[in-house]
Length: 156
Length: 75
Image 1 (tube, rainbow over the protein chains, first blue to last red):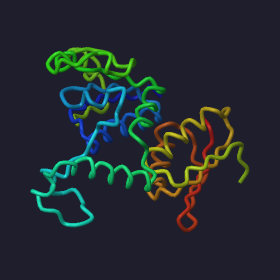
Image 2 (cartoon, chains in turn red, yellow):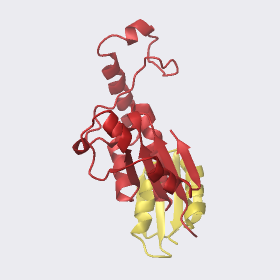
Image 3 (cartoon, rainbow over the protein chains, first blue to last red):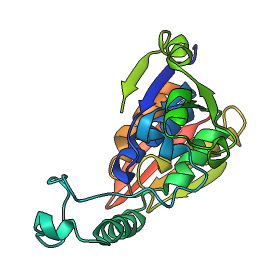
Image 4 (cartoon, chains in turn orange, red):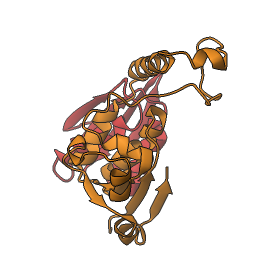
């Protein structure tokens, strides 16, 4: 049985969008698949050493379940984003959902390749030392070199 | 059913039961049996898919109330 391969592109940096790439990658790795994730634009936030600044916003997200109905203008008030993030994290913990760090550690242990888009790193003037040491740096050709030979390839 | 190792995955949500099952199986020798208990209602389908993908045989998959019990044989 040759190992299947999966390539993901992670482009979002909010808490809700952070989960799909790390859930799929950690699961695929557990199935023995070879996995690469290419982090670009806001997805680069998911490679930061400290993930505590990853937030969820109820703004422009009418599908997000709220405990009480909340007008958009109220959602825009200072502190609402932090409050929504705290509530979501508590909810996740109570339901046994893994912390983002834990899923990322599973990926690292399983040798999932984590590639930061060099172009976006330069664009946002990020310091490489802000990222976890396992992060590698590359461009579109690096990603396509692996993605061209995969069984599953997703843009998230 | 006899088993060589037990994994308590109760209270854990997707994908943790599968991730921990993989780790627990890695500690077994070929032919040894792992018992997994879980409360994730998606784990019945997930454990079947895990078995089919990895070739570790799912000897038994049962549900008792909110508890799901699986026996897997290490490939």
